[in-house]
Image 1: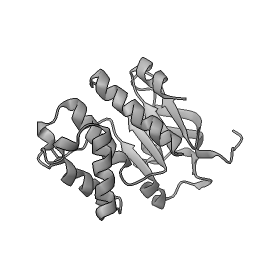
Image 2: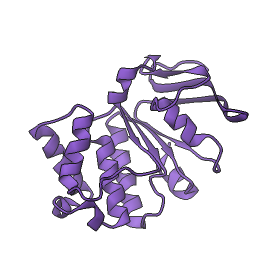
Image 3: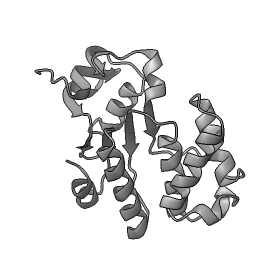
Image 4: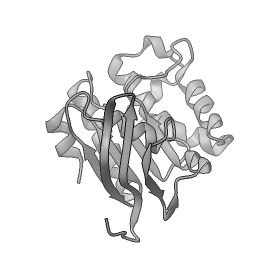
Length: 204
């Protein structure tokens, strides 16, 4: 695969096996800066495995992953935002407190981060719910909060696993709108979803 200087992420000939089961066979993708790349396929196709490798949750058996021009390193985690299929929100926490907590895990604290969190909540029409507990939000609004938590630390690259699953059309539209905004600001975005229509309508 030829390398383009504009590529933020390159996955080259990645293989991953679990015992006798091969999850990925010579996977190759490249995601340029300022683009939205979609992964489509049935359950078991290896989409989540690939995303977990990029996020360094697991390692490939062979092949390489290049991030921003160099082999993927531990410190790249701070430059990647990952929204897994299985959501990880603490239901008893208040929305703004939870966002600040996740930002701190990624090394971002202070008033500027809080202002950015409030800005995102406003973009998603959730500003009036900033002090609400997560458990009191609808599934669509919880999805929006999870999305904000994924991007709040200003990553260069974000991975969204099933971002449209089980949410209403307005929430889908909100996520599409914000991903388009992030793309325009130079982020690389990787989306995996079973919703073919919404995914194709979002990706480049």
